[in-house]
Image (cartoon, rainbow, N blue to C red; front, side):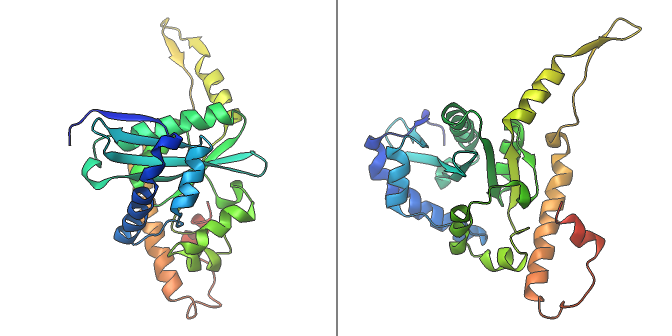
Length: 248
């Protein structure tokens, strides 16, 4: 759908969209069959009033998309959560615009915080990768119990519990401002080759291997679901090399 879409920080004047947003979050989770933590209209309104949300609107005022910020462990960690786009506007690039805007807002409000996310969506993983996130183990995320309580309303909470909060259907991704600073510094270093060419030294980027990672994510989810359904029958079995990889 081609319309002029405005992506900006949400304000109190946007509060009337809260029920539409939460309803779409619930419907989207149901359609995917891989849940997200439920949020009430009151919770979303609070995020808007605190200046911790980004909204996308069409020129005629039609709601297009939304995302919000949560801070954990005394602002040591920040999560960009609840990314949702109205179905008619999906695959238009608006999700990328929203993620970039909420990422910028997070960096502005919490410049020293590590920004993380849990998602089952490959499109979101790609956007995160482009922003500088890296896939990490769950142990590198916040230990704040309030964050993990939010997973209780997810349809996959039993899997998270079975895995002792070390793994689940979601993939964990993290942006570390310290590591990002090191990468940017490394990119400024150059060396002159014998032919007089300048070569930039940079680390191998995750996004360059996204297709391989996509296959890994799908296989991981398949095995986790299979293992969850057969958890009692698998008691006592030795872990395979593949199960070890799932805790990467």
